[in-house]
Image 1 (cartoon, rainbow, N blue to C red):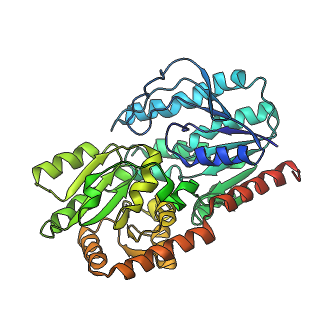
Image 2 (cartoon, rainbow, N blue to C red):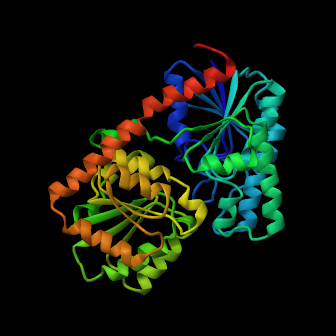
Image 3 (cartoon, rainbow, N blue to C red):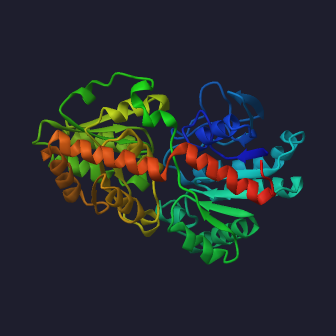
Length: 407
């Protein structure tokens, strides 16, 4: 089987599609990637790349073809819109030429925001006359509205029309969260939909073998670690407010590993309010994450109090479960339900700093054996429901079924 992966985001940006693509190649699936220039999450084109021009390179054994991309910047709706549209236009204009000698059997388009990146995939699928699988990570236009970047009902309605077109012209829609099924079905009643959750790289299951980096704060007291994007969707103000409530507990530290549009605000608030228990480590190499997460006393995931986010399962939940540490989920809906079902930690309402602070204190007050039990539950749940190799097999099965192959 020959697979063409199309995604606005790809290595060296830290997205799930990187590991998935590598595993397809390991299974003997001939795989090519069409993507943009790396710039997430800082919003600047990575060193060694430039925004303009096309580029061909390799990630290991995977051929990677890159089209021009306008960088997303920070906290700028116009720049973000230009970033999204630049990939759509570049993918449609340059993609067919770059892929002129590529003969895929199927196209897999990986769709965190924006879902609109599926448009060039549909065009290339039409040109190549092959089925297109759209793997949905975020619901549009709901996510667009919830993050506050777009408030115009006219624009949101237009985006919904495009999303409807994408769903209806996809041969299969994979969704990373079960509640997404109803949202997709509302716009495309007849489309084939399958639940296909995220997983993480195998290194998260064996963090002792992962690349290490020294972070002294993780050697101090009781450390609650938040990892990943620091943006409006994560409602990180709840972490700042919880830190203020926990300031008197000198042995408790809240540690942020990551960057994003709200990191500078968090830094200013921590300085203004003298929150010495809030540590902002910034963005660190993705290969060090398993090692660092395993050093945490507990792991924290937050999402804003919006209906769309109640339907979302952030990929960090699978990463947290895989490393086997207790989890605090300050969020509503499906992600919180998973933590409760797994008995992997504590779930509290989204954007409730008092409840978050209380949850930290509850875990802090537990014995080591009690916290170890929660971590073991998390890892067992991961192995049963989110194991990487099991899900790779499932994805290959979905694609083989579409192309009528037994390979």
